[in-house]
Each structure stands twice: as C-alpha cells, then as structure tokens.
Length: 239
Image (cartoon, rainbow, N blue to C red; front, side, top):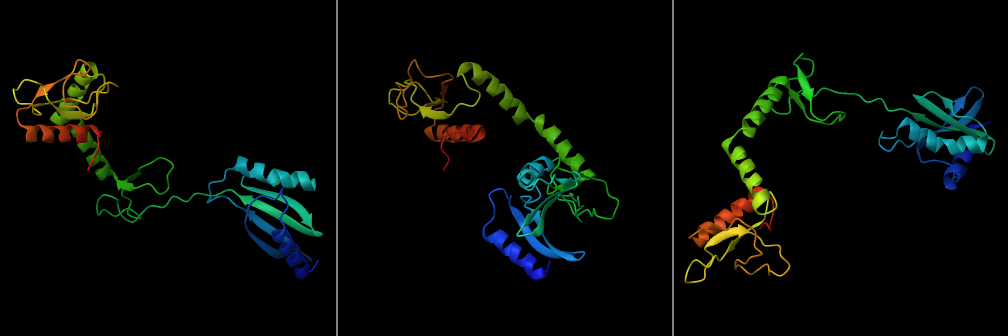
C-alpha cells in the first residue's frame, strides 16, 4: 500500500463522504509499518464534545465496518476501509489545563509562581477571573456591608409594602392628577394603572388605580422622583 494510494483514498473520502461518517476536524496519511493509512480526528466542537457523544458519533462507523470501537474513555478509535486503504477516526478526550494568571484580576498582586493564595470565580470555567484571597475577602466584606446599608433596608421595606398595596413589589411609577387642586396639574405620583379600561396616558386617578397615591406639590420634583423609582426598579421606558 503506497502513499499515493492512501492519498487517493483520502481524496475520494473527502470529496464524497459517506452519510455515516461523522464530522472530522482534520485528516492525515501516515506510514504504519510497511503500509500507509489514513486517520482523522473527530471534531470535538472546541473541546466540548464528551465521551458519550463521541461514542454516539463513532458508532455508525463501527456498524458499517463491523469492527468494534477500540480504546478507552481517554482515546476511542473507529476503523474501516476505503478503497482497500485502512482508515481510522479517533477521539482524544480533552485534557483541560488550569493556568494561573500572572496577576490578580482586581489588584496588582502577582499570582503565578509566587505562592499567593487565590480563588477562581465561576466553578468549572477555565476563563473565569482569578482573585487573590485578600481581594476575595475584601469584596465579600463590602457585599456584607452593602446588604445591611440603609438604602437596601429601606428598599426591602418599601417593596414589602408595595406588594400588598399595589400587588407588585416593583411597580412602574407615573405622575398623576390627584384632583386636590382647583387647577388640574400633576400634583402626585403613583403606580401605573394596568386596568384595561384606563388609558395609559390618562393621568387622572380612578377607583381602578392601585395604591399608594402620593401628593407631590412640585411637578418637576414629582418627575424626578418617578424617574428615580423606575430606575431603581428597572421598569418603564429608559431614555
């Protein structure tokens, strides 16, 4: 079996691949003792292909050739012949390499080769940021303090009240006309009314409107408070 025969078999195989042939990342021809063979690496889809999927993709080759899959979970090979040339398609289980970056992702501290303790954010993600332990502890302390900050406590209490008063913890707010003034003007704020019979642009207050209705004498101040509330809640149209 000559190299030219193997090359011709490979050309025929790639020009008109059988339906049972799985995706192959690359092909090569090589000498195996006194003969030439063709071999190809199974496409691992960026090293994301698992062992079970590899066996599933290589299974049709074994069924076609009558030769069982060879190897272990680390290296699996399927063999067949094409134009009397031995062909194999193999799968090599990816071996993930966990590398330590030279520097902490949050400070100038050096990591690789220094013995500095570090943590990797995102379990199982080789590309996740790596922090030195002091940065990890500092961030955790800041998070604990933030969870007990007055603004967080006030937000929680308000949302608990709104869940009962308006039916949702984070309603969309609007300026409205309370009717307390002789001249109609937006003199209050309140949650947007979601009743089907209430036009969205109608700023009047009806029985269908949810509580609370808050008086705000200054329309500019009311507009500002509405924007603050909606931004904090993450609702409404943003400019």
